[in-house]
Amino acid sequence: MEDPSPSKVVLLACGSFNPITNMHLRMFELARDHLEDTGQYRVIKGIISPVGDAYKKKGLIESCHRVEMVRLATESSGWITVDSWESQQSEWLETVKVVRHHYEEIIAAEHNKDDVDTVKHAKKRRIEEKRFESSDQNKKRDAPHLMLLCGADVLESFETPNLWKKEDIAEIVGRYGLVCITRSGGDPHKFINQSDELWKYRTNIHVVHEWVTNDISATHVRRALRRGRSVRYLLPDSVISYIQEHGLYSAESEQKNADVILAPFQRYSEASTS
Amino acid sequence: MASRRVPLVLLACGSFNPITNQHMRLFELARDHMQSTGQYKVVGGIVSPVSDGYGKQGLVSAKHRISMAKLALQSSNWVTVDEWESQQPDWTETVVTMRYHYGQILEEYKRSTGKHNDSSNPAPQLKLLCGADFLHTFKIPGLWLEDHLEELVKHFGLVCVSRGSLQPERAVHESDTLFRHRQNIFLVREWVRNETSATEVRRALRRGLSVKYLIPDPVIEYIHQHNLYTEDSEKRNEGTALRPLIKQAHQPIKSLDD
Image (cartoon, rainbow over all chains, first blue to last red; front, top):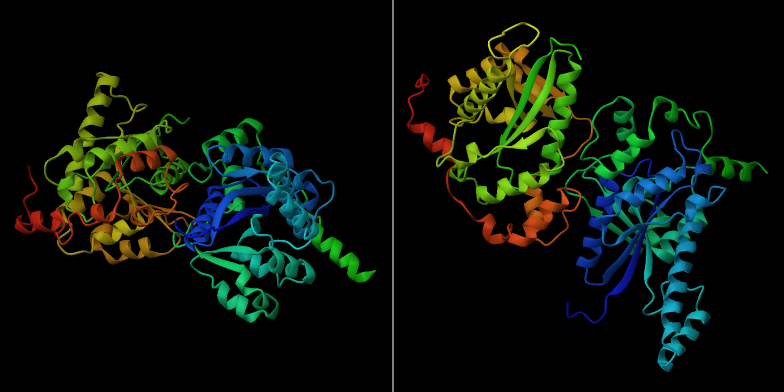
């Protein structure tokens, strides 16, 4: 604790959260423990950002429900919150744009904090510096870092054709940073080593080992719900009650977007043909 | 509800040091599975923490393990904690614990049915609920008496939740006793890999790492309040032989009729 001043970190998780499970929440706990254990970081906040309905994933239910379930699930957490900005966009947004948005929000909040005590000149000067450097993320001394929190599968999806733009990966990993939770099976280090792109930014990729396998996928939860099986202890009780109250996951809801192409594939294949 | 379904109570024995979400998950999976057979109606679940006499390394006192299990099961409307086994001064054979609970269940049943013993009201059964690793304890020499194992699978029955491997099938195949009573052994597949063990939870707690979402919040609070799992607590019973290994070593193998 005598360490001069660890950098503040905000963790951002993007995804469907259809529905949120204990595994999603667990990832935040693991990431925070890992980052703080390095002595270099202090995790001050976690943000869960459910994707908008325009993502068009099969079985994706309305974002208002997905956001509300995350809100219920994070009620007992002292540091994890839900943000509905991404889910309210009418079109699907590239993850990098979501990351940029949240970084701007963080910087704006820092400014407001500084503006409050206008007495201190030093702080005023810092604000000037910030304005000057505002495009140069994570370089400022006391502005929090923003890192994208994800499972190892996301890291591996970087290689899926037409899912990610190269420059987006470079910005997310190079400018912001990635915290990647890995299940006992995978070896992200190997994956990073085999990708020239990721290897360039390897110091910005924090790999966290999850020793306790806790592989509760939302797909599994939906399947169990459709079949009338218990999902207790896989997700918070409050979320289960919400699902039951609104009759959320059924054979019918699973057919949503059944024959629709995922938004990113649509966009990037259009781009490559035009 | 088909009236001829057999009422079933599931009993889980173990350290519960501490109880985890995974323990409670076993009950949910077992209930779904047993009800889907069409033969049973699961009417209750019992968590029975082992007594301090068990001598397992790192076992904190039964008083705490009971309190934690109670907190964890507050939100369940069908699984409860029973203190009987934990209050025995010595370790109790699992079969003996089952006999006790079955006695309680039958008494209750007789009280509720009176003298009318019609077939629309079949007698309840009691089965032992366990994880996949449990079947392997049958192979550890000295841990189980052959008669006990026989009584367990013949008289009561077993519901075993596996984690997606064929280990339980193999264990049944490799034991003549288990194989003979295979109709009374129900194997439940868990498709979600969820390997939260109490050992891992204690390890994380000793190291000051988060265990949130692995065990219920009230249990976490209780652990912190009483500072339960530390490097010191983990050394408890270190080097001590497990009580069953000692107790049964001095017992003639066919001393069952009591």
